[in-house]
Length: 240
Image (cartoon, rainbow, N blue to C red; front, side, top):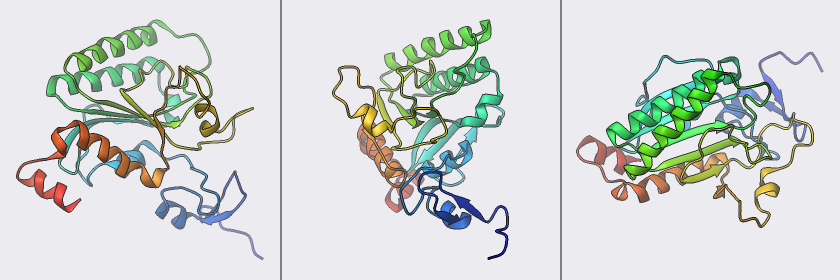
């Protein structure tokens, strides 16, 4: 067998299956053999959930960080997506961006979806900007709560400690993918971690990526007057 061209195949780190990359993308970057969930970019996370072409940035896009608004079956949402590339950014900048998302949602009465991994900014001391960013997030989150707006957290790679969301406030409802990267020492499967009886259990449901959009829509619909829109939004909802 000849040399496998780079960029054509990917090897699953869980079961060692060789997967044609185009097939992996079509399968939402989930291994068809063992179900391992490969990482996705912030852009892919946004595309997975929102109506095509509906996303509008509130801030200048950064590597690994997208903050903006978009529609899901006609319902307008405030949406943020963070991936591991956000480690290249200043910690405080990430927190400030999330605070801006919460603020926009409160001012415009929009439900919030925030997609974030665990393990970001786990090393080193937090500088003044990071601490100010944490305070800003908490302040804006209070506004969301007072307005009675939904805040939905989606954890793409929960870290097996209570700080797995890295000071990013967790939502009213918290979903998590079943498996993320396996390149951390002594990593445990989130299904095993969070299925243990505990009064501090923070994840409401483990959801496979293929079911994530359906599950999120049911939550949004339940929390926003049945998800009913008007005019063009109603047509989008009917057409899915």
